[in-house]
Structure formats: C-alpha cells, structure tokens
Length: 261
Image (cartoon, rainbow, N blue to C red; front, side, top):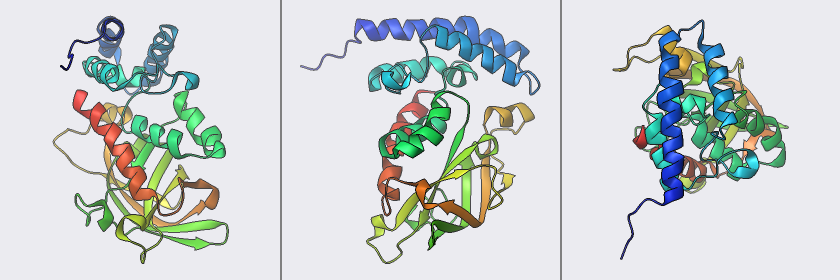
C-alpha cells in the first residue's frame, strides 16, 4: 500500500519556507522597483541564507538544502506565492535546471568557472535550445557548431530564450554532427555573456505584459541571433553529441519546478 502522508521533516521545511515567503518576501514587494531591485534581492538572500534556505534542489556539499523531489515540489509551491520567492532562494528558472545540468555533466574547470558563481547567486544563466522552425521537436534545430582549431564557431537563431536579457552565461545547444543518428547530432556549449556573437534582437511579446521591472526580474523571452560565435572547446558541456540527452535531463527537473509555481 502506498503511503501518501507527507513526512514530518518535509512539513517542517514547507512551514519554514511558507513563513519566510509570507513574512519577508511578500512585504518586500511593496518597495520593489527597477531602482531598488538589487538591494532588496541582496537583503532577501542574506536573510534566506541565514535561515539555511538556499538552492533547495542542490546538494548540501554545494551549499544547497539537498531536498528530494517531494520536498522540493512543496517548497516551490510556497515560493510561487511571491514574485521574489524563488529569486530569494536562488531557485528561479531557468537558472536552477541549468545549474543541475552543469553539476551533473560539467568538468572540474566548468564547475569552478561557471557553476560556483551561479550557486553563490553572483551570476544568472539562460538555456538556449528552442528555435522557430523546430517546434516541440528539439531535433529540428538548425543552429550549427563547426570546429575551428581550439574553438567551435556557432551560427543560427534561438527563440523564446527565457531570461537571456539578464543572463551572464548562456548554455547553447547546436548541431555538431549532422550525419550522426538523430539524437546524437547535437552538443551543448557554455557561453560567457555579453558576447558580440550572441545578440538579443528583441523580447518577444507574450500574454505577460512587458515592464521594466518584469524584465529585471527575468520575465522576458528573447529572440537571439548567433553569428560567428566563438566558443572554446573547454566550454563543450558533457561531451560531443550529448546535447539532446542533457536537454532531456534538464527539462525533466525544470518541469517539476515550473508546475509548482
């Protein structure tokens, strides 16, 4: 017989996060503006970390809370009550799922250079997979990556790339092996931003009204032009031809978090 009772320790974590959101995050929204955003978020994050509330999904050895899927889902539900909830605990999308991908597939160098500042909340990251022509089929993407000495050169376009306007790092999927089996044609690259080869053309209109504050929060979805983007081979993530597999891993976690908000 399946026991659907929520464990007591999970209830305690949920209650702690609920109190933090209701008593700290929601009141902070009253003074939130583009001008005050950085200071308010820094203060919230300091208070969250003082309570041990940080990166709920990340392992304890990395400074996170190490929560399992059930506890994490319940925590994300509480965080969704405030526009500042997820940001306060550094568990906002699209960063969190991309950080998990870097954790599981990144090299020691990539962990040190890219993952650590993300976990510390010093930087933000976007995930650039979607393209206009591919629809829901990620294998339809056409952005290419061609070897050139110690680098890859990327060219193509990306569509609906969430939070690209506030990102310091982009994780970009591109086709490296067009003659390989369909799900082994793609690789993933870590790109430092800003970069002259990674250009935001616009924030795409959606049902969510664009405001300066909303864009500062990361609520924009961008059209990207990638032109002669130079990426060092050291920034190839997870091995050549593994981009599609890693993308599925990332989306699996991301769907859990998004459905709880």
